Length: 622
Image: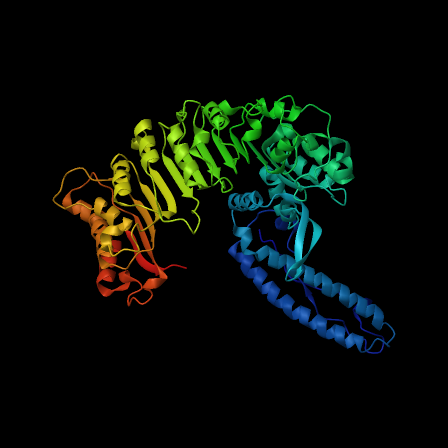
């Protein structure tokens, strides 16, 4: 049945006259019924007939709206007449009613109504994942160098629910979009607990993701427990009281720059974390531990609840040092451990790591404040580096660390299940001579762990270091012993960029020469499963032999060529990116990008036609 009835002509009554002198009808209007409210609030999709009819009605109503505008202007000019004011008010009301009808019709025709509920719900979930309920302060720029801080509330889920009845029903049905709450304390200027309760109630039984931070806190400014209430303020304290009472529903808890003792000051109830899966604890808390203001103690009811959390698997902390003597974290059940700015590298570091017997992912990053650390801090009393066996550890990320610490960590671990290793090393000082990277610890790790068969991804960002002939010989042994490797990324320097050495000085040249093989050679191939290789080499002197070595190796390892020579044991390369960065001394070179020459362009086009994306470039250092 159609949603629309026939047009109804207005009944000309006394109110349809502009004034007693003219006795003219207001408008010869034709009124169409509104779109049914039930249809607007549902996810009903209008049929083709409905769409055609609605578009036609909108066209007529547009003309009707124009007539209203003209009539209103005419009435304004005749307000001195007997009933002009009353007629004008009626016209305004009818015009507003017409606009409302037209707005509903346009909403009725909106393309988003055709979006399936499942897709719209997925959009809601995806948007809210990065947009939790956020209560805090935002800095607004006034002019360059000057900004003002203002209290702000961002409630995306609530905003979505206010668009329409249909969206409101859909938003309320998606419990997860109400489950993320981010609170910045202290000095919340007004009571926002009703909004927090709304989110908690709409989340229903869904697990919670709570983020609590104090971005204003500076080291040494955190008050004692006696002055916490004064520091937080009444509204911040009320918010914390609500959130701490919901810790039993918390799946992810992130605490930034605020001691848990301060959190729990709002509540004297016992707490527990039966569904907690991830804990993030950063910055001031561990510093305050060292100051003695809030020492980490296993008897503390927060840390006792954390230690007893049965599902806790992922922990991200800024330092391990404060935990070395306290049983606060269930190390044995962790599968992920991320440490930022680790401050103590001694037996305690290894003793904690050794207890993580279920660990699958370990990350250490931003440790640039201990560049002068000696390898002796890793050694036991007899001078031998301790061996930590982590049987399930598959992924290791060492980001922005010093070469000394990197080498010591690699030398101290045994990883039978290692599949991914990512290393990013700090650059040495500009005044230091060019250093050669030592592959011995990595080679020893591979040999000791017998993990090479499972190593599928290797990323080495050692851009401040070079690889000479001896180092590359050891590196090639690592590659030969890693037949399952699929992804290789390296950033390094040419070992002899200041000497006339030619292509043989380039790591790019040496590596691709190693990867290449003859079409009639059926012997074992280095890295037979390799699919993606990315190389960046600094301080390279332009040399066409390097590009030729790259293209020779890539051509033989395309799917088309491998199939032609019957090498089913070797996987075709999918992506090859080689970038050689030249010193500014080379700016007089005629060719900036050797791969742009016609010969190389033709070869690269053939390679890409065989299914391999290939890029080989020379560029100047930025």
